Length: 551
Image 1 (cartoon, rainbow, N blue to C red):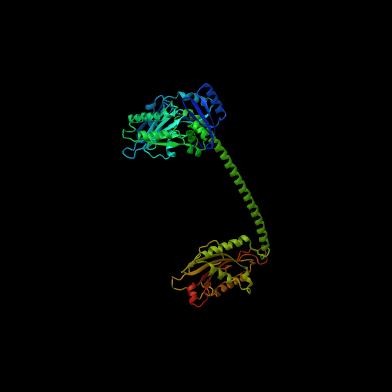
Image 2 (cartoon, rainbow, N blue to C red):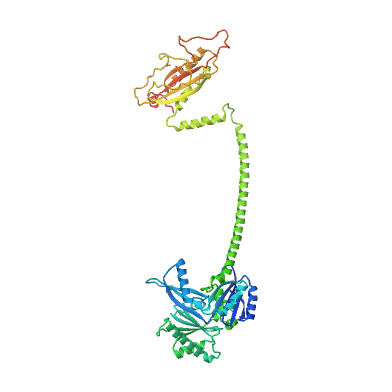
């Protein structure tokens, strides 16, 4: 069935004439008959030119047909096509219209495939019609044998007998088609049907006997085979013939009237009585295609136009899809632009809110970057299982007493913190200039708490490097500041020992004194650095001593 085109032209060619019908959406719109003569050929050419783009289907009702049943090894693909072509050349070499119809496949042994090979032995009566079709460049879809369409009648009337001889009275004569288990095996056309009704019964019976003998010679049936004779007519003329054959000859004879079927298909009854072939043409117009006898050379125009139509449809579909996709992208772009504009407005609102809140913040000399760095350092320190938090709290607490204004000038430059069970651990930092070499006797301030003998107890040891800012050269005041700071640290309950590793001035009696006392401004004052070593008590010892446990 050709999809996408509701118009169809179905032709039925006989030895004398050509019947042409136009169908639209499965409904017959009109038909014409053309005589197989030059005038009929010219009229047929004009008919096709009026329907240049309509697909054409040609049914052949011929006398000289050949049917052969043959078994082939089961194959597929290219091997199957090559094997079928070889058989066609073997049976019908030189014949132009031929085909192979698949019948069945064996279920046992080698599971061979059974084919019915069909061909037109004489195609002269359709050559003129084919030439007209090619000359006007009509779209020939295929050429089909009328008996192959008769198989659809067997299914339509649900005939279940295994051996059926279907007899159809057509315009060209009496068509007898043999079906075995519903499958076409052979067909013959008998022209010159007598007009007298009294002779029809004998004519049917005589031709049936001839067909029976032919089937027996071809080994389709045996002498004991009981065939069912089915007579088909559009006007009920075969009813009396069927009754006469059944009573006189004892054959299983059935009469079928196609009027009800024609009504269901929408065929005009008067036209069907004059042209019984319209029933087969209607079946083909409804999309019931059978095996095609036409070679590819005759149908390449139709296939080429189908390809162009498919390309055209694909192009239109791609264009529509592109337009739809462009529209979708455009809508998405508008939506994104709207979202972007809303985000810009929200950003402006948030900036105004931030500025309003920022105005209420207290003024600080510390920059935002320094605050950020301090917060990040605090987070990193808090992530450790042990941190210098306690050491930093102790050093900060010692600088807080407001009564000692001198401590406000102490600036901490470096803190090295470690956990150790050895109180004599040294600092390996060599970057600070050495200006003092204190002795061990006066190095400790209130270092009355000895370190425990338990090596498993770890102390927090901190090496603090600091500077006295705004140093004016008063070394005694600087020494007092350092000692006060060390004493404040020692008073903290968390501190085990404080050691001044370096003082802001060299108090050794061996040091040289340089400079002028007359001109204080000309003297170059070195920076007042000092260094402390602070040891904190372990948390467990601090708790046992009754002190406050610090975080």
